[in-house]
Image 1 (cartoon, rainbow, N blue to C red):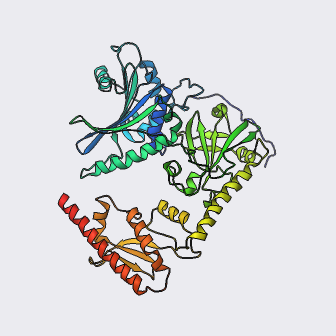
Image 2: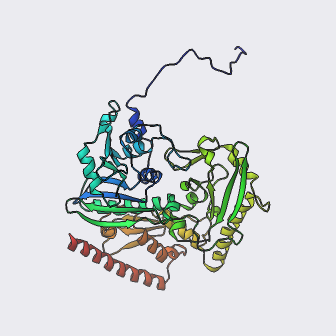
Image 3: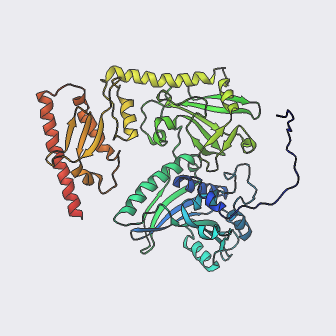
Length: 514
């Protein structure tokens, strides 16, 4: 083996290697979640100076046909639209812009739709012609062929949204052949819209809460039936500030700490401790207690990561009240310390950040590590207080929604070393609604009544969370004793009779509706 080593690789020229058209398939396979994809498009609206953004689901009877994002921003002319529709199109991003990579519109859209049409109009006169372009996956992968939208249709689409919100200028992004739209009727569309719009509203309300808190910016989600023209759902997205607790969980917080990194300089950490046992949406909008603790990174007032400790430490239940707001410095675009994901749903940090956290202090010299300890102690103190006033219980296990298990564990002390109580659906005699299986420590629910209880919704392992929670609260003490006394047996018979009557009434309601 030779000991010679060249630290610089010698070059003998260069060669132009453009991407294959199949690159568009890779671009649309980046794992964009539906809510993150819509948020990326709303970012473009904000960058365009929009005051109003409308997210419009269009349906024809029981079939969803299109999704449009409409804004009253400054719009784009033909040349600007060509740049916007070019993969990695070069344009100047302002220092406060939310866009970075030039791929969001295309990758976010084609991750979820077979085609994306963009029609835009700049401020001139009402008669000024709009510009329109369309990408379809079929034509994109055969040679990057972007369609030019017929000018008459482009004007027709602008006119459709004139004054709602477009007046003189604006942009419309239209998705067709949306991949996760229901393909069958039978009420699937209504259930899909209810579930999707609720999740979308929470996501936008959280990640764009600083913009939504302003008086001059609004996001509206609406549903219209194109066959009748009836718009039967229309509501504004509300801001969900992850730091909007009614009262602090610790009297000495919030506090600001400064972490200094040699390659980037000082970064301010705004450390907060939530009050224990909070049930408000601002606290619960992010995943589980493990997911929602840690750093909340903002770039230009847009939340780009909600929770996570970025290799500083491992998440744990005792830190569920700890949240730290970090406004990334302007130099982040060229920094190696913080690297944003293309989808703007996370921040990768270098070891330099974790090292700086160990020596971060506030104005009084208090270390950031003390904040972590204080958040831990706040949670433990609340748990001890609960433990002295409420009896320990066997925890819930399989069949219960994660959020339900967490709520019970937050509210009640747990018996150590006990096998959790499971719940499952099973065929049993229709004269009973439930059975208690002590040996397997399981609450068995009668499968005969499942469809009626779910109201036609698709079942799953953790379905019917309200019913299962109530059954746990009724029955958990049965598993904590070796046998049931006469009073408990009488209660079991009482609950059985009432629940069977209620379940049969629910079945009759479903039959009458059909």
